[in-house]
Image 1 (cartoon, rainbow, N blue to C red):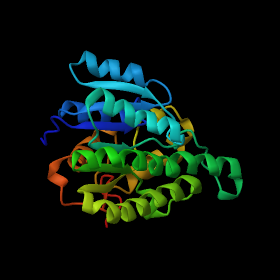
Image 2: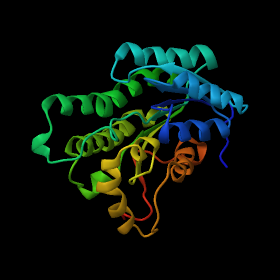
Image 3: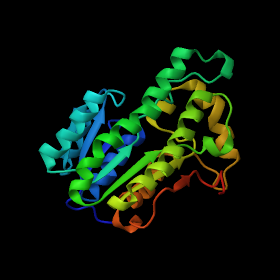
Image 4: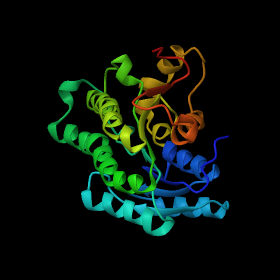
Length: 252
């Protein structure tokens, strides 16, 4: 297991679902974790602390410059710096699947604000702290839907395509600073948000399993090992890549 002792990590959207599992894994591997979310961040951090792990919670909207600056400041003032940024916050399970012609301009812009502007703002805010440490890891959470061209959620799929493009371009810019930038692309995962959405179960669940080489549901715990690898020194010479973890749906 890669050690993250003395590392400081921010996980956006880290209070529930996949983000909470990411937060728990990084903390279990030794990192001090700043859990960032609109709701529940303090409570999620308290649960990790009760397990003997290092964490704080910060309430922040990743599409707000001021909030993002505050989360980085909280990491630096509490734990002394920043080494790892996991851009996990995204709008997905609350979106209604349907034809692209039914997506309003307002809904499109909301998805882009969180899913695309958010990772840009957080990376921009985090880089100076990582440069001060001499290295860093940025992991952007994308989606295998980009490679499939999945219908029904055009705004979401488009936003995740932008995240992959951002990952590649940012990796070129930050390589000289010893900061790696990679993307992790899950398949359809039974997070708490997804399991609470009956429409998602009806629309996506069975179809996702049917096309996998590994014929079972994907759960958040299936992703944490790949995330821990990308955040660790084991991935120090890997950047600009998208690692698909979907049970063998997409082969690249």
